[in-house]
Amino acid sequence: MRIVFMGSPGFAIPTLDRLADEHEVLAVYTQPPRRAGRGMREAPQPVAAHAAARGLTTRHPQSLKTAADAGALAALEADVFIVVAYGLILPPNVLAMPRFGCINGHASLLPRWRGAAPIQRAIAAGDTKTGVCAMVMEAGLDTGPVLARRECAIGDTETAANLHDRLAELTADLLGEVVAGLPDILKTQQPQDHAAAIYAPKMTPAEAEIDWQLPALVIDRQIRAFTPVPGAWFTGPKGRIRVRTARRGDETSAGAPGHYLGLDPQGGMRIGTGAGEIILDELQPASGKAMSARAWLNGNPVSVGSAVAMASA
Image (cartoon, rainbow, N blue to C red):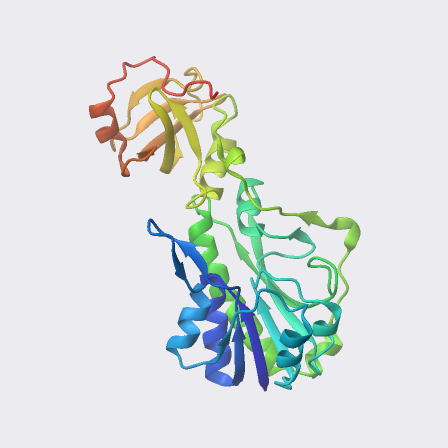
């Protein structure tokens, strides 16, 4: 199968590897390089760097809407475009180019969690299962017919980082099977129930602020959904503190929300919530390094029963 692969972040790499091992990848399209790091140096997208290391042709146009970029893509005469977290809109003329269409790998059980942040939203909502879908792309956002899907459970302590990696591998397996089944698998496509659609907009730093009045169950989901980025946070005595790792504690605890209740046997800080307690294991002060909760307490002594979380400005 002659494939053009489109993807940008690390999530797409397992799928690229699977397809490149089994088919002819004519070109790999990614978003343009971005400036990152302290020196703000321009760096290629993770997929671009990985594809180049494999000796694959890489392209990173600003968009696919110009006649020149669309013409270069059409000239490849691909059988199918496989898209995984590409991040750029494919205009109608591009969607119509390959003879078997454009197939997208999406990290949710569509129509639930259409959009940019399906993994984080699933955890934050308390979903007990999720999965991946192979979808025929059309003009709408994640609205196309589904060719195949795979389900998986969401663990009680699973973070977005853990689930991201599992779903990346599951996406690779699913799309590998779908491409191998072309063109017959196109006959199995099932339309989505648009009335049941739920959207997953990108998470914002403001959403990551912890409201200690909420139950520990909800706060735990929030922390796990925002790990590693943008990172759940609260305002401490000396400024913003990012929560790196945490867990639920005693569900019957009646400690005041946002107040320090003492150390647990593993050295974690017990913090009261609206119902139960959260145990903070690793913290990162603003402009500082990550450290254990005990180490943070050594530099910021707090007496039991005192407030650790302050009202944000």
